[in-house]
Length: 212
Image (cartoon, rainbow, N blue to C red; front, top):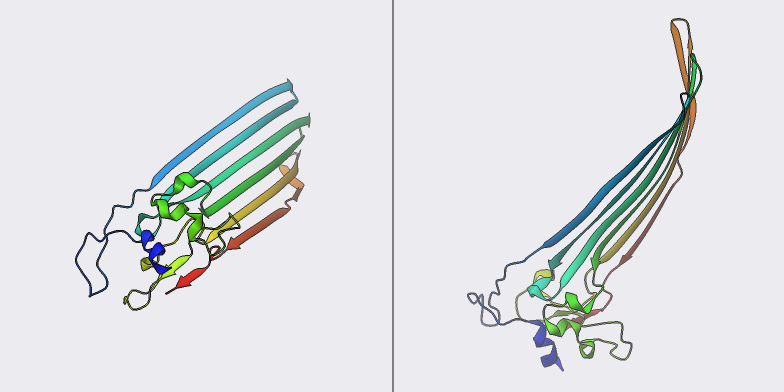
C-alpha cells in the first residue's frame, strides 16, 4: 500500500544525508504574466458642465512548483475599477464636483485549477486519494517516518494539498464637493460615502495527511 505513494518521490540526484535520505535538487521555474490597461474618456456638455470616466483592469498570475517539483501552484490577482466624475459651474463663485467609483479586487493563492498543472503524473492520480471514489481529491501530504526529514520541505502531495486562500474586496466610493468663493475667502464642503465588503476563504489540508 505504501509503495504506490513512492511515485511522489523523485530519484535523488544529490549526496546522501543518511542511510535513508539523499538530496534531490531541481531548478524551480516561476512563470509570471500580467495584463494591465486603462481607458479614459472626457466629454464637455457645455462650458459649465464636464464629465469624465475611467476604467482600469489589472490581471496577473504566477505559477511556482511545489515540493519535489510535483505540480505548479497557481496564484492570481485581479482588479478592476470604474471612476466617474461630473463637474458643474453654477456661477463664477460656486462650483460642484461629484465623483463615483467602484473597485473590485480578487486575490487567489495556492490554486490547482487544471490537471495540466501536474509536473509529476502521480500528483494527478485519483487512485492515490484517501477517497478515490469521490473524484475530487488527490494524493494526501505524505510523511515517511524514520527518514529524519521533518516539515513540509520533505513531504510531497497531490493536487490541492497546498493551503488555498481566496480574498475578495469590493469598495464603493461617492464624493460630492462644493466650492464657494466670496471675495478673498473660499469655502469647500461636501459629503463622502465609502462602504466596503471583504470576504475570505481559507482551505487547509484538503487532501488530508498520510503518515507511514
